[in-house]
Image 1 (spheres, rainbow, N blue to C red):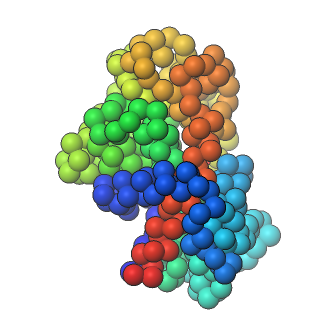
Image 2 (image 1 turned 60 degrees about the vertical axis):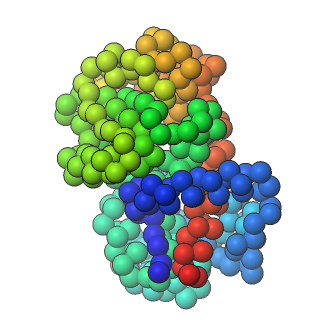
Length: 309
Ligand code: CP
Ligand code: NVA
């Protein structure tokens, strides 16, 4: 059966662990797995800007023996002129998988419902599940077993990253704290989905408004831009509203002494995080950025394996 990754809880806890195990294997020898030999093509479509996602999918698909086809919506028929499902019906006869960075989650759902090839969410307004696979891989490399770790996200709790930490974190059995002003708390349906998943794994999701309480004893400290793509007009209000949630050297002293700092990047230095933290000894952001490559290769191999089953 064709599987898709549209949101983090599309993967069961066992499936998430399987993909992370595979990523660790693939990272040991980048060119050993040729799952896309042929070469088979993977379409990677961007409605929004990208550096890491574009590079890591292009390089990863090539590593697997495949051919990446990078498409900008601005010069394709998708994005107003043709529906996601009609686009998918055209692409599926020629490509092995479709990777799409877009705005509305509903577009991804429509694309996936209309095709027999795997569809991967490469960031939507609601979720960024590929980033979370890389982040969990990075945390596992630096902190060992994910189960039972406490991860605190600071900032915009309604962002794609906060939602993905909520879902993917509890799927891994982590205790996820989201620290944000009440007006920026995660969406209720996402919190409910995280709660349901946490009941299976022993993880938890906690919403906090006090950044000091949220930082206390955390094993993983996380933040993301206060101004996600599509929110540029709210920039000034967001800087005002989210200022207390900046990750500073003091935040790191409140966290566990062995805590790591992660950030999906790009970072607005001086806003959501101080340079002393992102450039400091606890930061693992460059490993995290590299792990996009290994995690997404594992995801593609796993998805293609399911399709053939
Ligand atoms: N973290 C991330 O997705 O980066 P890009 O926007 O550069 O792809
Ligand atoms: N929350 C950010 C993530 C960028 C990778 C955004 O959506 O712009």
